[in-house]
Image (tube, rainbow, N blue to C red):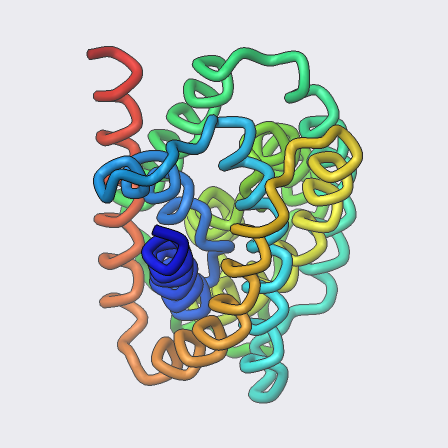
Length: 259
């Protein structure tokens, strides 16, 4: 049973982290529902929403490091965007992660469902012409970027996600950032955000360290592989994959909340 547990958790971490590196998200959009629903299917102990959020927070920290490392060359990391959104999302995630301790299991799931549904709607809004902008001419409204990142940080801190799945559509739809710059910069912002979420979850005793360690190992292997794959895929295809992924997860979460 122990081997089955290790393999199951590793595969969940590997799949989520590969998608993380490819799409510029922390991977919690995949791993959160997988950790909740897959272990019981194999007769393994079910994680609580608090445990899943804690494991996710730690795992995302390492998955985003791997993704950023793979994107470090090529000019896709927008430092100004990373600083403005990174600092704001970090502050928000610290607040959210400490606040989550007093929330119910269902409350955490509802917050996650709202975030996922919002991201899904945004991903289906047309994004014309953003990928025609040269990398050295990318501009955005700093205040809007900072405020939205702070709000995302609070929500993501609550569920132990770094908010990359919501930051990506915000960058694409609201800030009009080119897709590959969005993916690379989102991974860096996600890393900063996950620091706050991880500190909050660890200090409030919401982390199960053994499965978290397994997920970390999987992340360090899979995230760079996903990032390399993402560089070769057309930007429109990446947008479609992310949109379908987020929509499917949002529907699954809400079905479990409401039914």
